[in-house]
Image (tube, rainbow, N blue to C red; front, side, top):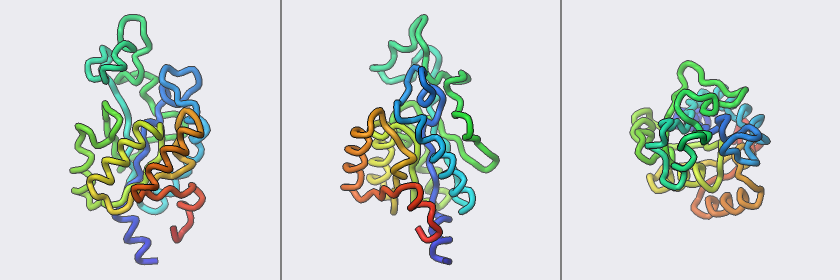
Length: 198
């Protein structure tokens, strides 16, 4: 039991891009599999809180003029376009059921990886975190890039909760999970990860 408790003290849960513009039907950047995982992401957050695991809410928030958006997406920020996850917009908000609480940490990114051009690594190192658990969307982009950066940065254990992450299709999700497993990433189901001795 003591070893498990010690493990959780050096673990953080990353909740990636669970924002209305990525999750809600009809949203400008909707990930088709995203809405289905909301209950599992909520449960993963609850499990993490019960274990004393810090929650890091990784979100996209862009300049409404698109000046900090990838080149291939800038056309979405021109006149009369939706301007997805613009700072302060409804679409940039977390979906219902997910709430940032006191003690949680919010990290804003403007690219796929939560590590790219952010201070995530220094924050994690400064708080003694060397194990990461990943939830959110979407598997081939923000999940994968964050995971591969975490592996490259030598995080001791990187875990992707299989059914608390999603992609546009199940096949895309499975293919990317397979690739991540091949570089040593753990991919348990939420039920498996939630077990007391996991």
